[in-house]
Image 1 (cartoon, rainbow, N blue to C red):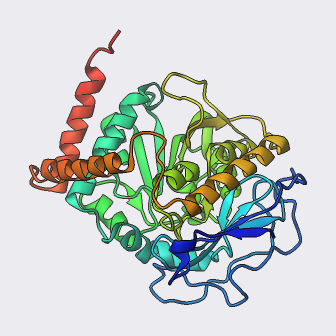
Image 2: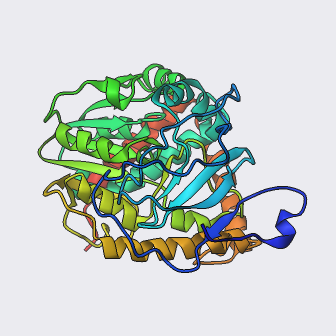
Length: 392
């Protein structure tokens, strides 16, 4: 499968990321969605792997009998054997399109159990959000909704799938929307209902049970990467949209994360599929979703998309093959670099900025007597900004 690039000094004493780099790009790209039928190479031996955060340390036996979910390709290159916490996690890059995926993929029962109780603890370190996290989430969500007020100002019935601690739903209701939330984590679901008074139920996509044409807007923020079959997820959500409805999808950009994170601090058990702007758009097109018209705010080359129902598109095999070459180089660079290489600023500057931002969040959040007070302040601030005239 090619040669392995390993950073010499980093590998002395402990195993970390291993990036498999073929001698030349693979030009044989299958374009049919879910077309592969042969078995994929088993990852990390035959005994499975243990994912941090499951709480039980059991082997994870996923379905590794299919090819790439995006291009159908069967050739995959090992990019990592560890997760961001040092636990065993095998991750591969598709040589046909550049999609990066955990291998094997956990089963649905394993994922349901993980998200019901362990995910928030492993990712955030707590079963309910901290006050500074609540303030940060409301601040970010408020700025997001103001930036895209042309979409969020339409009202109607909205669904937040994977609603987390409920900040989006709270502000959406303040804007006049009829809101519903679905959150698989028990603690965050109870927090949303009891602390913020939101109509959130604990469920998964498959158990949600909505009828076709139910929603004017669906939000899927940092959720798609957690799905075993993201193509099926997008097709399902497309069916739930009313005519002219909008689906907002946002995922982490794995290319950007590889440049900004320390070596070996990249992959997560819960992030089954790791997208970049090219693979995310190709997947959306394959699901019959097209982007809303571009505006200055809705710029190209991001991993946050406003989508609506359209024609189903066959992925461009040549464009995906070029993306695979690009992603291969980015992963190799991440494995070799001693420090992150952010495209803007410096490592030290970004670190200092992050520390300053966290201190600002903690100080600001401490001024509020409770979480609900933060929510009410954010809603009032949003309403005031919406009522203010736009700058010329």
